[in-house]
Image (cartoon, rainbow, N blue to C red):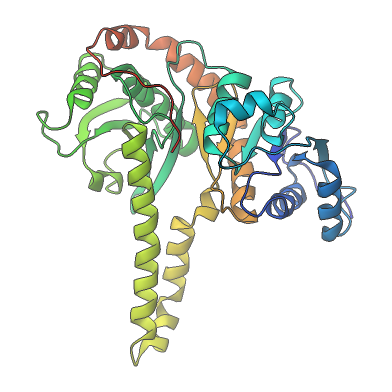
Length: 362
């Protein structure tokens, strides 16, 4: 097989034992990504990976290699304990490759809590970051909205939400080339007296400390995630995770309802034929396969968290995202933005805050 030109010479480490159907789905994704020109290292049990690769024909000339890691972090493992007790597992070994400069990003469909733990213990926080966050882009009619946190931090303080605003704005700029993104705080109404003690403190801080990196709009409601009026919405990880899963479930339910309505009517076949191009375009916009995964923001490296049920195409999309974030300087951009908002963060640390219970996974 003739090797295709490389997209670049950077290497993406794929945790080959994270997805529900691992390692087959990761192997298929690695081969597909390598055939697109991405340099890939599959991390996991070498003998199983070699047997799996043999099912994909000749791959010897692809920019694809294997790094042996004999253990696996399971979905029900305690994240912090698993990182300590299984240092030779595929996930922490993949992070270690980035730390050593062998790879430049990690993609995994494994335990999201363990991904957070690896980000903290292997990469380390960007200087000044209190807690990392998981970000996701929600597609809408007028563009996408970045929502964070998606589940890394169930209980938050004002310092966390204002840092999410800063990091979300950087991410929106890198992912969607937005100049001075519009940021809002997710609440139960647009009026300033709405929300909770946490959201009111965050709103006050962002109003009193304007940022050169983004425009602050104030409170936003759930409908604003799709309106195109805001580029970034910040919230705690509990609310963000519930919102994301509700949105995904609604999208699936609507697709099913539309299909049932079309096929259940006499002229359904004709209508379906006319609507097919539009329905396919809609599916591409809301299909998780198209956006791959969510980045962990606030750590010193690129890490993309995929769904456990990810397909090979979803993981390929995550590889493409990782390469895009490397090329466009996501981590240096976050580092610079955190450094330039010291006054905002100092004010946030002085706010009355709820009891801190630490990191929790979704």
